[in-house]
Image (cartoon, rainbow, N blue to C red):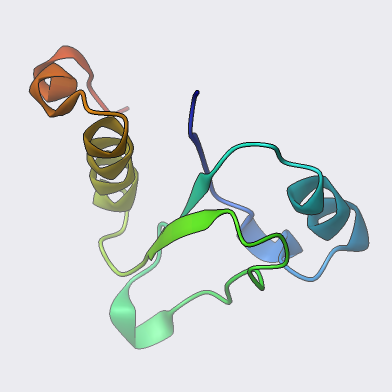
Length: 86
């Protein structure tokens, strides 16, 4: 079973995005590249599959979300095998 890590961006209230999240058959981690003083809005946990929401670490939010996903699937030692950057 996999885990989806995604950033819905400004489309958190978009009906198509909400419908797609409802159809997910796997858990997901919602990651935002924001900063705490200006947190982006979150999706409502409409399907009950959300594991976490990561806010406030800018681009590092994606790295933290990936680390959480790997830990959740029992592969914490795999963390050294991925890189997030530009």
